Length: 601
Image 1 (tube, one colour):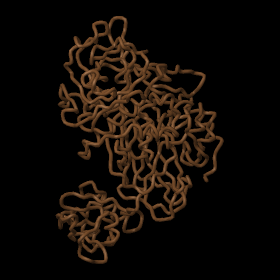
Image 2 (image 1 turned 30 degrees about the vertical axis):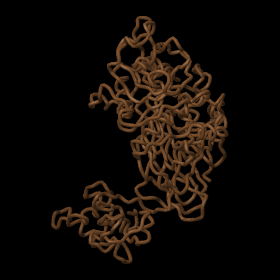
Image 3 (image 1 turned 45 degrees about the vertical axis):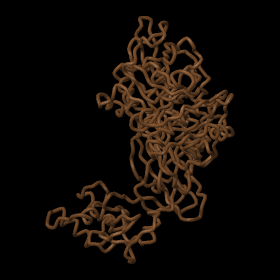
């Protein structure tokens, strides 16, 4: 193991002068208080995603949410008009958090797989009993998503496993509304370590439009409310204008109506402008409007915690390696770029390939990804950079274009968490919050931090940096497969086949039996019948059609680039070494590197 450095720890302490911890309502939905910030402790537990803005205190919105305005969003939309969505009835349980998150996931499954599935709340209730510290059965959306993304299948109401994997979910910016004495509304992230941050009305509209786009494209979104504040109801219309109302219920946003009249709301609690989210509750279809409510856009709490799943896939991985079995519940902020590493012990002696890396973070981030596929050493020269990504807040999966074989008993994944426009880098973690994640634990030689990718500090030694940080693990997961290659398949071609791939390897990676001419290796231009459809095979770099990478291929790509003899069809596809749908000098350079053994194709 790479030796530790006391100087490294001292410097981490220095840059933690402005450390922040982000926790999005990790308290149960029965909790109304927000913990006050304390300058006595460098780590503070908040219910917001704060970004410091010294000049204006105006909240900095991630770029994604600025693109939503004016993108042809309808004035009214309801998922129930295109999908069959069952109104759940939680009865006398406190399972609203499961019902809402399951309803959201059901809509994603329905839209993605055209399959109308009803998931079981009881299965999640029982499955999470031994994992989380639940009070009277209460929880939140992050617990359900943490449970599902840790390898636990959703179960339908007929007790069948639904073998899907959640690849991505988004945590939208935190927006609470605070009614002022003059009747105007202040849009705030409530409280952060740096003090309360504010949004402009235009910024709120940008986020709201992105939520609408999410519902149209992916499915429903979970939200929070105060269900026992009865004075805010008027039939199926609801508007709470009290920021301090008790957050005690989770609901599901399935649409919106921009023209929903203010006259529908209580005369004593009436918003200033029309417009409402269409919300599905979990009290059965005999209440409200067949189980449906309308909550004003101006409601104090409705946009305080919005989470939606954006991508699911069939569950097809071999092994899942993780240290954050409960899921992400916080993000810690640093005033410098910082490296985080997870070391995993392999659970099989059989061949396996690292195929996907999942990253959890309650703040948006930009990352560089490094791996050591041969052992668990964090020595800088053993860590190979494999990519760079930018992610929204939430949980996102990075799929390796070509899976990497794991050859040792251990392997390591390292992320460089880069500072944002406000000079803060956020690191997603699972830790013991002395509440619902109270059962979160870690061990030595699992998660590490470093400032230089050379001197590393084990999280178990970082207790002095903040409350319970010594219990933390990084939210980095690794998925493996028996397949050595991800093929790119369209209507005509199967691409990204590695040179000198045998038919047996090809079928194993494809996961299907193939009708093909029996030769030693796959060659560019060969035809294959798969499920009754014919495809042309493209071996990356194999321009002359012999299945190998040689100097002849290098000569052919040079001739193409100088327009002496231009490539066409599958042979031009084979010249696209980096799979960006272009053939250029980058591909020429990559081929040269592959021929001399500097880089694999």
